[in-house]
Length: 573
Picture 1 (cartoon, rainbow, N blue to C red):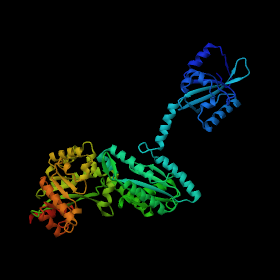
Picture 2 (cartoon, one colour; picture 1 turned 45 degrees about the horizontal axis):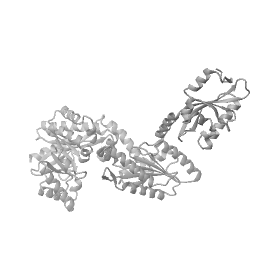
Picture 3 (cartoon, one colour; picture 1 turned 60 degrees about the vertical axis):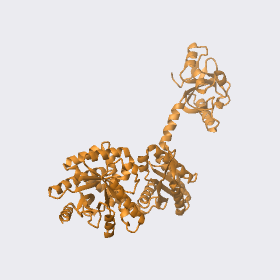
């Protein structure tokens, strides 16, 4: 049918009435005085869509079925006006109706004109398709596109939109606007050890505290797993932004109780100012992120304002990370070995393998500058595999050279434990080196074990069963949970250097050191002290029957060749 022609309706046409009444969409007829009229005819489907009986609908003004906002009413009247002026069906548009139960119903409304046969007057035909569920889905999709589902906060996309708007206002009004980046310290560790349900509960609690610390007009958003971003429009001065940051730090630091367990979090905050530190969204967000990372590198639980030096440092770190990607394939990594001395005999009982980076044109780079980057870039797993293989081969080489069996210790990265087949993966590396597993020791930190104690116990047991020795590194600096310690078949405990440093002058550290030595012996383990640098420390550890010591007092880390010479000279004398 040509939609530009009028439609002739015969009221006594039975076929029309059947089609009208049983149509799968809502249909209604009204006169052309749309603003004052009721529907003259409605079909069964329209009654079902709106929840009214036919008799009820025919008594209600069409406009009374709309929400009480002028926008809905004006939109429909404009639609009627366009139809009557153009005398042709108009493009369908969305329209809101009020269901009899008070809920909003979304319809896709199409209007057309129909002349009654034998009469001069025309009628308006309304075709209504219920799209309420479709609109709910669209709104949900729109919500997910702009809001974080867990916390209900705006997400990165919506934050960027709001920041663009705020910067435009700031420019017109001469305001100072601050952008804050807040990152939770050690959140991932808590989520990994306590489970993601606990992590989610923590995030919801922190979200509430952040919101309570800000003005209503301050924009807050969740940017990542444990990162939040905040806009302080018309903040006044940098000092005002600092006061807000301090308030946020204090709010986050209050203890949180989840599942009857009290937990403590801290945050690091980066602050950047518009227009001083940048005039566009991307620059300000990037600078705030750089400042936050600087706060994490410093003391944590602190805030840092952005400076140009930070950007230079971030650029340097990116360049360093790019170089690290090539370092392994270019054979730029080497191992140095620090001897461990048995106090009972004065002989070298073993060595610890320590990673060094021989950067082309620069020389040896301190581990503190690149080990964290290996972790951040995910390269630490591959590099740790290389360390284990290289250390095993060195142990075999020393044995072949006629030295007494020297056990080589390597530090395991948390990424090694995150593999689904972690134990088999490590054992395959050792087997490929063809070294006796008894010559290898793997050092594992408390925090690594406590991420998933049951899984860690399974991995450690498999390694120990294969003959590999296991050392608990940095004991006393983490959980120090004695109940869990008995589940792990450790062969030695290493006393952290932070206790040894002032063991002579600090009575508390002296007591801790004695306790750890006694604990190790009671559990049938060897006690090893790290960071030994003075004769007084050696005397204290000897008096209290520490088994082995490691530190600059006897030797700094040495190249493989120099360490072989040191072992030969020390163990021969």
